[in-house]
Amino acid sequence: MKQDSQNLPLEYSTETNKMNILGFWIFLSAEIMLFATLFTTYFVYEGRGVGSGPSGPEIFELPPVLIETFVLLTSSFTIGLAVHAMRIKRVKAMIVFMVMTLLLGAGFLGVEIYEFVHYYHVGATLQTSGFTAVLLTTLGTHGAHVAFGLFWGIMIIIQIVRNGLNAQTANKSFIFSLYWHFLDVVWIFIFSFIYLKGMM
Image 1 (cartoon, one colour):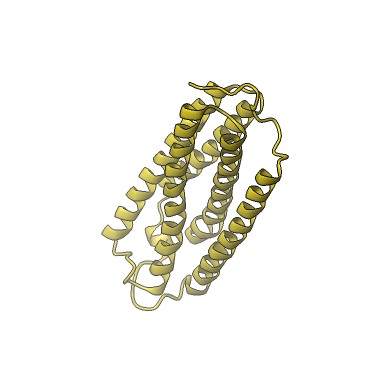
Image 2: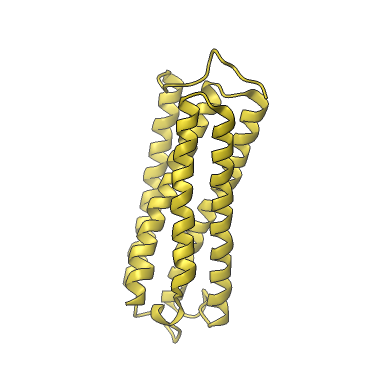
C-alpha cells in the first residue's frame, strides 16, 4: 500500500476541503428535508390508511428491529474508530474499521430485506393502503441510502489502498463518516417514532 507520510491528514483546513465539507452539509440539509417530509406523511397516514390493510401492531416484529438497531449503532461506533485511526495515522486500522462498518451495514440491509419479505407475505405492500405505502417508502428510502453508503465506502477503501492516505482520501473518508452518522440518526427516529410507537 502506498503511504504518503508527508500528507497524512490531521486537520481539514485547506480551502478545498472546507468547500467540500460545506457542500456536503448543504446536501445533508436537503436529505433532512426529504426524511422530514416522509415522516410527516407517515404520521398523517398512520392509523388512517386508504383501503383495507394491516396496521403497524399487526405487522411489526420486535426482534428484527432490535437487530437492525444494534447493528447500525455498532457501525456508527466503528466508523468513529476509523476516523480516529485516520487522525493518528494508523492506515491499516482505519481500513479494518471501515470494512467492519460496511459489513455491519450489509447485515442491516439483509435484515431489512427479510422485513420487506415478511411485510409482503402479510399483505403489506405499496398498493395495500396509504399507511403501508408511506411506511415502505420511508424504510426503503433509508435502506437505499445505506446501500449507496456501502458502495461509496468501498470506493473510498479502494482509493486508500491504491493511493495511500492523503489529504484528498482523508477528506472523502471524513465526509463519508458524517453521512454514515446521519443515517444512524435517521434510523433512531425510525426506530422510535415508527416502530416503537407503532407497536404500542
